[in-house]
Image 1 (tube, rainbow, N blue to C red):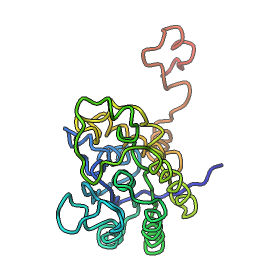
Image 2 (image 1 turned 45 degrees about the vertical axis):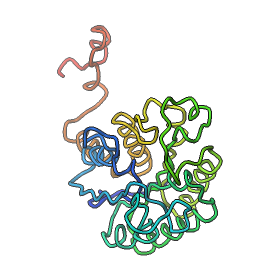
Image 3 (image 1 turned 180 degrees about the horizontal axis):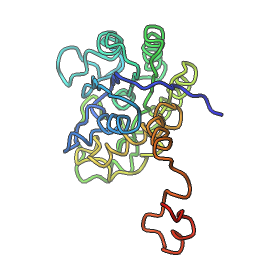
Length: 268
């Protein structure tokens, strides 16, 4: 049996992250990955859910990131380290989702410094929100991480301080965030290995995921929750009990008639 990270429904989901968590490039609001995740949770758990999306485009983990700039330019500030108490802990979440790594790796933030700030945020959230399920969403894949893919693009945007190419930093982040999740009792969601090379999911700006990519990300985070937290299965179990669902009265959609006749109970 695997560890059950949470058995009771969640009511307050708070998300902190960057532009993809903000939903940038999603044409339909329902397709933003945070909204996709929220919709799937609402459909499967028992009771309502309120979402607070506190992602900020161009956000970084701390003021030590080379791409950090004070003020409103690119909204890199306040960094996650500067705002997590106000934008995460103060909301008393029972599902706390952090999604960082893309911007910091693209501006060359050293792994040790990046993880020092991330660790402080996660550990403090753990102490001050002891009943919350903490989810660390790993960094997204990006065309910038593959110099061959990047150089083949017809249009290469100028990302200014966030123009670093190569995957050495982001891969180091991915492993370090996985380790942090394990050490702190949080869930880790590996997006990088799922998205790597799927450039058709990325929009024209070569950075942000389009509607289908956003939905895939939301579904991937949901899958990690569903396979590690039993509260997700509550409604399915209720339906099974109330409707008397079993092998002889379920399934068969678009199936061969002889197969349906073999398995479907005559009275159903």
